[in-house]
Image (cartoon, rainbow, N blue to C red; front, side, top):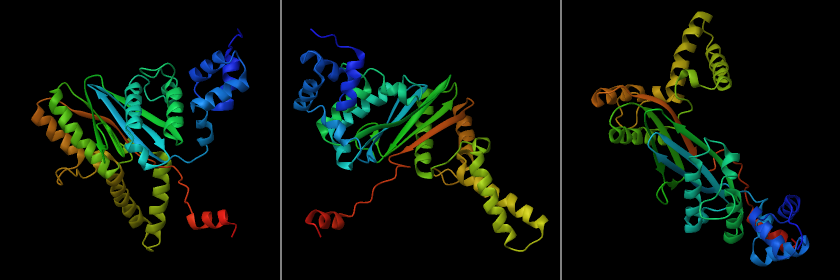
Length: 308
């Protein structure tokens, strides 16, 4: 019997696009014959995934998973929104979110993590589902939050199944107070994050490049007024304050009560709780953000097919 080496498995995997364990099994079944192994994979429907890898995957699901003081969020993409309602796909994404709790936001580690209930990795399991469901899919990104004491709360917007939807949010609250009350308040803050889409926790967390670009734009706008330089400086201070109120979570108007900032709402909650509370971080994933979607021209496609 031929020796199934790692190099041989890699060769078949590169050629077929199938998962590592499937390639190893195919080579075992075909006594190390790569061409025969490709045919074996094709018959099983496992090599089909390679043909789909070039398609744009911008739909899919965002999933969250939390446990006490820790939480994780993942985004798994598919080509169409229809797949997000597929129970097999939903189950896969939920399992991936559970695994994400162990990798601290490392997407490569997540791809290489063992997939529960199956032989092989998360990446191998994804390849199988590409072949079975018939669409390209991708494990896009993951992040996690953790506090030494307190809770990481979550919220899913446009939920299609428990913990799965179009927008996923994590909010970390550090406190020694009652966990159930922290969880409830944290979910409300997470709902605010989903709606208001802050870009940073506070002023110190604002991206330096984005801030400098904003200062340049605001300065040019102020100078266009023709006012003296000392007036322009005051105008710039006021406009930057408005900018921070728009992008910093703790300075945003809290959409839940419509009266306080988020920072003030945290203070009031801590007073009612009888224990200090610190909002230490948040993560907001919106499905497909930043992915360039291909615009289909169906009329042109039909015309090309007909030779017109």
